[in-house]
Structure formats: C-alpha cells, structure tokens
Length: 288
Image (cartoon, rainbow, N blue to C red; front, side):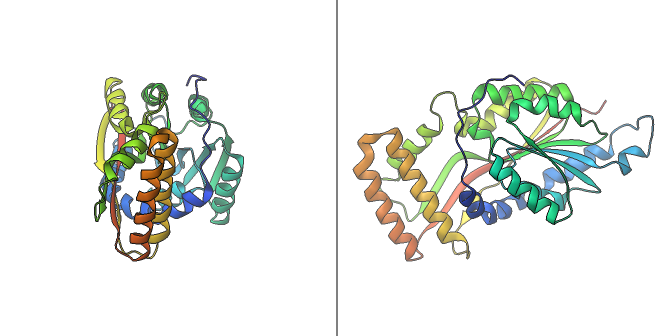
C-alpha cells in the first residue's frame, strides 16, 4: 500500500475493553459470513501438495489489532491451526495483544506498523489459506486508504473479513430533541478531512467489487439495553459523542453539555436503550 496514512489518533485501551462485550454479541450475526469463508477455503483447487491446505496453519493478518479482541473472538470460529500476524502502530496495545495471545498458547507474530505495510506483510507470509481481518477500523481510514486496501486485497487474492464498521445509524430510546443536532455533529466530525467515516462500508464494498472481489455485507448492530456491561459503555459512548460534537461545532457547546447531562441521568436510572448500527464485510477472491 502507499505511504499515505490517516491522521494518528490513538485508541484508548479502556474504550476497547468497554466495547468488547457489545462487539462479541454483535458479531454473532456475522457467523454466516465465516461459514462462507470456510467454504471458500474448502473449494480452493489443490496445489502441488494436495494435503498442504489442510495441515498448514491459516495465516490471519489482523489490521489495527488493538488489544487483541478481534483475534480472541475470531480464532474460536476459524478451523484448524492458525498463525496470527498482529499489525498495529500502537506499541503498548500491540504488546498487550501479544501477551494475551501467547498466554492462550496462540501462534502470533507482532508487526509494529500501519496498514500501509499490508502488501509487504502478505508477501512475507504466503500460505494456502490466508485472511486479512480488522475490527472497528474502516471508518477511521481515509477514503484513499479504503480504496488502496481493496486494491491490495484483490491483487494478493486474499479473503478479508472487515468487521464492526459503524454505518451511521444511532437510535436512542427515549428520544431527546437534541439528538439530531449532537449526533449529526458527531457524524460530521467522523467525516472531517478525507476520513471515510460512516461511508466506509459502502466505499469498501464498491472498491472491492470494482477489483473483482465477491462481496457480502451483513448488519452487525450493537443492541445496548439492560446487559451488565451496558451502563459504562453507554456513558462513555454518550460522552465521546458530546465531546466530538463540541470539537466539530463549538457553537453547540451549551446544547451538547445539556444533552449529555440529561442522557447520563437517564443512563444512571436504567432508562436508556440504544441501537448503534455496524456492518461486517466479507470479500472473497473468485475461485478459478
């Protein structure tokens, strides 16, 4: 991939921990995509060694691996031995992910780099069965990076499972008259500059199809209600949206703070429910 990179915006490890149970619940909706991926591997034509594809580990490159939650969840649903290449530009998060994986006995290789290194990493890790995956990453990329990611995947003819990208749908119950203003400003903040934001799923699917990949998109929304993990996640979710709205539109400061105060009271009283739209994208190279 090119050396053009998105603005460096570190992701807090505590946020990754807060969202992990919501992510895991949402990803149950993507199990049919994983079944399609496994069938794709099973349909691959045999190479020089017909038994190799069944004995060599699946090589999985995890882009923006973070604390390793994507690996921890997905590894349970992939067949056979696996070798995980964890790629992230945050050394602290990467070390945490590697430590957790090795504690589980997983075969992991850390790569301290951004997604612009994907082409090199794939060339260094050939295998009969490979996968590129990521979780909650596409919307943080620039539009150019999304298109370049699609090009590299197609050029390398490697499947991809791009999980839990926000699609812009946020429904909060009970509604508040300032929801459109605050949430709208947050979404505009996600599109600042050339960031893909909530267009990322559409952009990725279009680019992958243009390069000949077979693409399937499945909704994987968060349903946040009365689960044990819901309140701290909702509090952080609401606070981050208010902060980003004010950053993008300072004229909304008073309204955003009032909105947040009301929403946090609703949350503390157990009155708040939220649906946050996400989608998973599976891209498969055509089987020759």
